[in-house]
Image 1 (cartoon, rainbow, N blue to C red):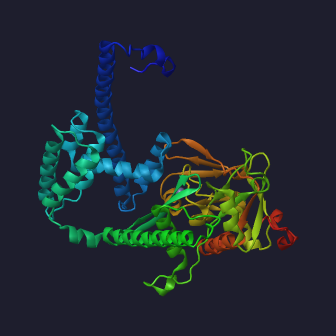
Image 2 (image 1 turned 90 degrees about the horizontal axis):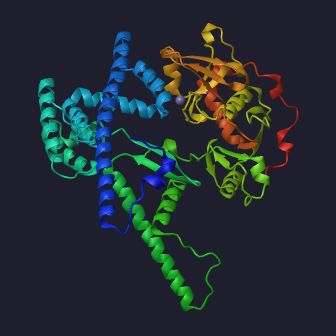
Image 3 (image 1 turned 180 degrees about the horizontal axis):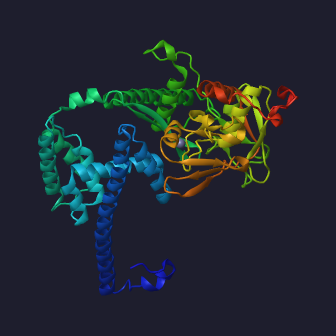
Length: 485
Ligand SMILES: [Zn+2]
């Protein structure tokens, strides 16, 4: 049973010089590990059943609506669950769908979690490989999958298998049992590519590219070979310089193979034109950079200054931000409330774009609680629906990503917009949650990027191009403003 963490020093005392005392402490640790793991597996099994039940709930409602393929009610119940567990909405949907698959397709494996034979991680491996097993006759497929679970469970019993090790085994078993060979599956899933970036902290990021394993392996191989050549050329140049008695360069290149590889990927993607289609030629990269004025003016060695922000949330080093922002043609100043930090006004001179600038600056991202999809990828939604008399004004508009925009209108969610852009969401279950705009300091955003956003927004929602509040009109020409740096 759990005991207060603060009392650990008394409870975990043992005599390091007494072998019996050492052995007793070790035995206690291991028996507690076994007890907790067994309890965890039982709870995991209960959670899997509950998640499957939640998916079933949404699925049956979707079926009753006549649109099971839209999955709006699955989306809606997942959102309500995501508030309870404070997890990303898309992650909860995947979790419910995974548990639904497990319970419906591999019930014997779920039972094995409940009685402690396998862990929840083992189950993940069994389900993800097992879903590959298919047969055109439904009954035949069910019996193949049951046989598969039996041999997968056989593998786990009596040996130590991590999730990754089990996954390799189950993938092989599934491949042997399935009627659709790998080559055919590969053709069907050909289009499921993606490119995304995650924030790795401290101004670092990771680029993820999904696609053909073969092609991506070739990409990695080519980049490594190029990087190796760069390093060799560098060593050669250094050697020649040393032999000639020249002084080394003021800043020697000390990048590792991995760092040179990463730089090469960026260089080539940002500067070369693609050959597969002419439509993508000459497309320049744009980033949305937010630089708080206080950060800009302050001495960066002093702590306590807000960082520069990429897309409104990922902190990046101020020097890098300045360098990147220096190439953007102009900046628009966004004034914020000194205490609450919400956006008050945007210096502007194009009335129709002003509202969108304001909303993009106020919202920063999708306003569904917990969603962080950047505003530039979102749609502008009428809080109170337009066809029900909702006005096209700042106090009745907010950014929603397509995913949450569609769900909001297809299922019984409601939104009220309060003062200062605060949104009051009401779930189908009746829970009320307030979503506040991001707190921001005074910040600068490249004008070109904002204009691009405005154009994108105007094609997405032309009805929002009216009724600009007077406080957004400024007589002053912003180009007379001193540059931010
Ligand atoms: Zn969203």
